[in-house]
Image 1 (cartoon, chains in turn green, cyan):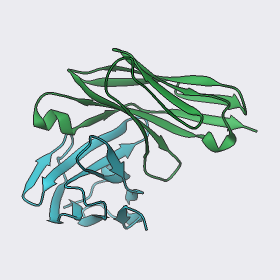
Image 2 (tube, chains in turn green, blue; image 1 turned 60 degrees about the vertical axis):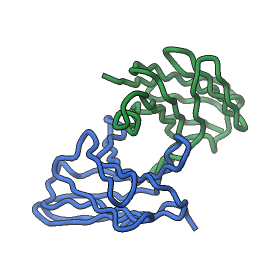
Image 3 (tube, one colour; image 1 turned 180 degrees about the horizontal axis):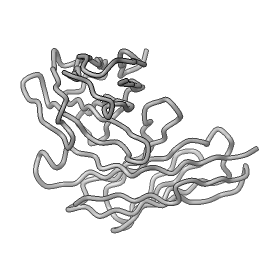
Length: 114
Length: 111
């Protein structure tokens, strides 16, 4: 069964204090790994897609990396506006039905204090 | 204007009532999805559609039905709502790439 585990569940940082969020996954043939940001009461906002081990993507203070078993979302010098829940999801390859489903982790709630 | 819109944004209903949640998109995407989000469980797929004539069940379709009225519109119905269907419901769309784009969500409470 495809599975995604995110850690930690919650993380508090001081403004400027860099850290990383972890997403461990087991999937039958990874087609893609996705990071989303979700603010309270809103829909997930797309951040990154990673397809193969060794791939990295960056956007402002965020950098996502991928290995064969996990992905990290690195946050450099975070600001209070980076406070949100960060969701990781995987898409399996294989059959058409299987490739349509995103399996989500439960998320990491990040709080950045000024 | 938002690319993916959902109506209503909030809804309170009673057990046994029929309710419809609507989703519209201006992204021109063929694929549309309905998810629900529960605290501590993450997002789970209810139904998805490749086009107007192609609708498929997701992992938790029991108690739900959908209708794809047009490329841009995908509705989710609860024929007889029950309290454990209280959740956040999200519509998503996908074009040629793999990325799914989500709407703002509908908060549904079933009393």
